[in-house]
Length: 194
Length: 380
Image (tube, rainbow over all chains, first blue to last red; front, top):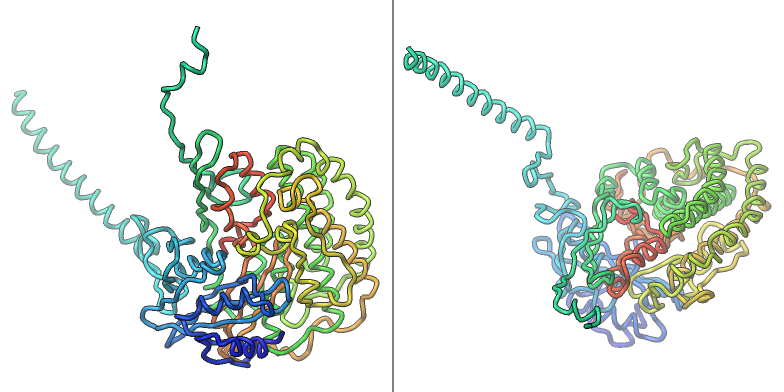
């Protein structure tokens, strides 16, 4: 079935949450309301004429004024494909998890949370998958800046030189202090011996 | 006298937390598994990926379209041609162009030769994981020939950068086709050797048959594609069902697992599907060489400064590991807005927390080897 026919089928079934069907530009897609996402995915999976049994890809795309979550679905039985998209808030993007319908979304959502920063409500275990725990920031966002240091390791040359200079200064101060102590110490020792 | 076992009823035991990796000879790269084991049986498993994470998707946002093609080689580094192809097809879909006929055939030849090369590595390294040294050298004997053929065409043995947006970079040199035909004959002649040495080997069968069986429902639910999915009995191949390049003109079989030595969807089936696909790829390359047309190798419609119109495209291709897709979002400028890469090994690996509990630690090695993962792709 072509994407337009799939959209009409969903509308005929009375599925709530379908916002619009975009024929272009390239790759027609169905815009879905975030709250009704799980329902739409279930209908797409269970219905006899649709049978979308595999979620190929879940992507988070940051734009200037919004985030978008795009779902590419595939039917291995009926050999057709469709694209769903969800528009999310720019400040705190959040969408219900697709892993209740498609378990493969588990890891895709963890990756999207890690790199783009979209939260998935209802996800069984939402934690970073690539970057280490405690990393600050989401690299795929447009306003991301690399942190200067992570758990005691300098990540930029500037930071490293700063720390090296600090270490050197601390060593020099310690050496000076030791030298002056020695001078005072040897003097007093000499006196004591004498 | 008390029986032996009565002496040991009050010995305290506990589960052991083992970190398998990231440095490990059998995890096919820098993969870390966190395993809780009660003796030899696993009770809990978690996967810690990201040791090879280079954030290639971020790189894709900073470079122009043709500049990103070499980066695709580094994803699944054993099938560079397939990855190049996926990206070029997505961008060509955005631009609305098609490569000329000769380029399509050459692309198919390269992609299928790379499939043979990748499956040979899977065969060789799997035997190494199980404990046999010789099949690796047999596999790499054939793979060296393929890699030499690639070197003659594009100058590189692993990171090809051969596909261009709109075609291929170089034409086939003189004598290449004859050399390729000689290789195909040799590969077909030597294929039964692999069966004598490994596939029908009783130790190998004992290690892999009926081990870590994955049902078709589980495989589909967790996003499995490619040989792993077909081994679980699902008859689905992107080359036949969503054809691209010239696959709709070619004649080949889609191989599924039949549980010949155990159950459908066990490790032996996943291994066997790859072996059968080597023969099918030989068949496809022969047909392409027989029907290779003359013509251009790059379409003239693609300008030097590639600026696709605003839009997005996702093209699925059949990698040796599964379905590879590039979701490219364009905002009309020369630099993509977003390049999202669908890596089959990422999905294939995600079934580990579900399947490992209950297996023995030695079976973990057999299972991961049968998945044929490449960490460059898992971590991107």
